[in-house]
Amino acid sequence: MPEMSQDAPLADRPLLQLEKGKLIIASPSEISEASFSIPAIRALRHSNPHGTLIILANQDTAPMWRKVAEVDQIITQHSADSPRKITRLLKESHISFDAAICWEDGPSAQAFAKYEIPKILGYPSEKLAKHLTTPVEVERKIGPIEHQVNRYLLFVAQLGADPYQPSNFSIPPRPPAPSTIQIAIAPGSDFGPAAEWPLERFSELAKNISEHCSLSIIPSPGRPTPAAALAKALGQSVISAEKDALLDHLAACHGLIANDGSIAHYASFVGTPSLVLFGPNEPEWKRPLGRIHQIIRRHVPCSACLLNKCPLDHRCMTEITVAEVMERLQALLNPA
Image 1 (cartoon, rainbow, N blue to C red):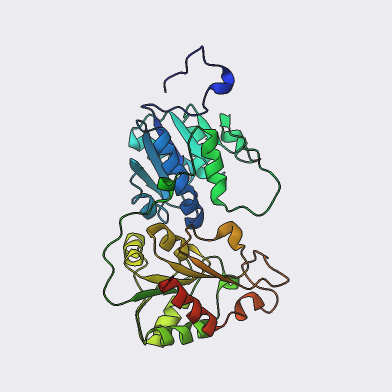
Image 2 (image 1 turned 120 degrees about the horizontal axis):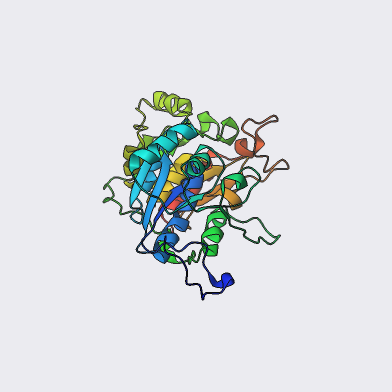
């Protein structure tokens, strides 16, 4: 990586100056977090147009990264890979990396340090700091809840990128929409049963929608049972859970109705308007990116508990009615 001029004051030297260097970034492991990091990666590309940008991603997030035009190369790992296995993948790439970015502690961060990448940047959290050569501090003011996307945007701003340009929030090209209105439904949630609207209400909703629209049932990663049960009740099949095909299918849909979970973030990434039912999570913090999406949430006394399983009566989800979801779906499909 080219050195800064010795005449440049220390305070003026950017933490990352790629020019024609090679930067590897470990994608966040969760689909939601990976989707939140994509605008920051685009901003980095725009501020380093001549560098090479490589993403290390697991099998769940790699399909999204393959659709990000600003990324030059994807190295795919399995979620359960050890630091040793990831280090071997880096060696097999035959790439001499100039710098690396880690958003979270884990096997990828350990592999970057083991591979002796000369410059490793990241937030200096307690566990991650020991793997970094260049901690990146971001001053955060106390105030209202901020969306998680700011965690990544403020980080790359410290590296000299301009994070809030509209082009950073673009979507991949979409296929022509089918002539029949196509609605996808994701009745499960990989965030746990507490994040799931009752299945019998999804069934009633689906029967109402099917009178006017074509339906597809989407399984949630790691929790396909609700989708399978709904499909059986409707006499349908579930859509393939293969991630590249799933992204393409969602991109061809007019809308998605889903619980808070990874499927909503897949849809947000490809630009499909989504109606997302929030329960234990906080939408101001973790809602899908984009103004085209709508949120239904009951703020009850125990919100936001962030639990996977409700220890009480699940009122944050059971108080949401089918009539309300139908009304909001109409607004989603006809914003005028």
